[in-house]
Image (cartoon, rainbow, N blue to C red; front, side, top):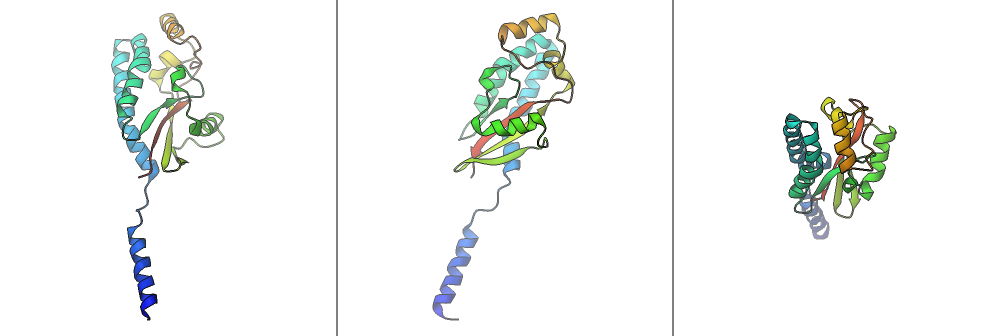
Length: 177
């Protein structure tokens, strides 16, 4: 083998060895969201112990604080829905087609990771209505709950759900590295 060919093989091998290993972006997105989901569920459970009216405050006050505290180092996370209650949870542009596909049933309800711009990834996973959610998101609400929601969210669209319905998404944006 001549020297040029040998040098080309060595250089090619070195570059191949230096390539970044494949990243499982679904696993990374799920891992980034896990603390948010855990803390939010804990806060909601504590709120529900004090009653559903208190849980409304958890969603409106504590949830944004949790996501803001965990959105660091180029990571941004939140919740959104096709039927918004809080318009501060509006869907990021990259997430809109994913949310529509989940809501209209044109795709499965599997978590998804996708490239959203150069060097950034997005990850979304569905939120399904759990029985405890029905107190505030169900087909019929207690009068005190309906009044609190109407007061806090005059343009609320987030009622009429049944257990097991698609409610919205948890989402996260993060750097590819």
